[in-house]
View 1 (spheres, one colour):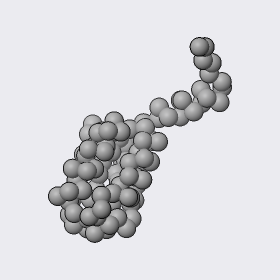
View 2 (tube, rainbow, N blue to C red):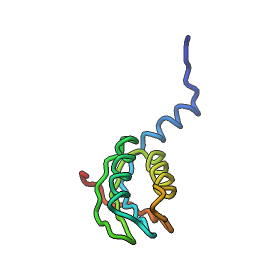
View 3 (spheres, rainbow, N blue to C red):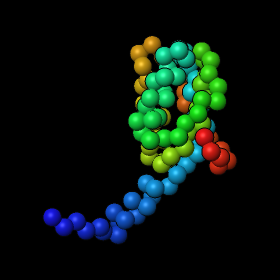
Amino acid sequence: MLLTVTPRRAFVMKQSQHRLHERMTIRGHLEPASFLPWIMRHAAKLGLAHHIAHASTDRIELDIAGAAELIDMMEMGCSLGPIEVWVETIDRAPVEQKNI
């Protein structure tokens, strides 16, 4: 089986390799005791570098780095979250590059 890469496909592959570093702020009625391990487990499954910068019952700030598409997936997952949390908003903002 021979696979060829069309120019459009090559563009998509290059785009997916773009690495972002963002601060994801999750607000709502959160249960950090269960939600934080959930976040860390799912970030690891997606291969994202991650660090919890702040955690309380109404706000979690997550520094996250990786491919843009994977960060989008993480945002979607967090918005659905485990059953015991209610996520109202998720804000994302770029941050300066640093090791997390």
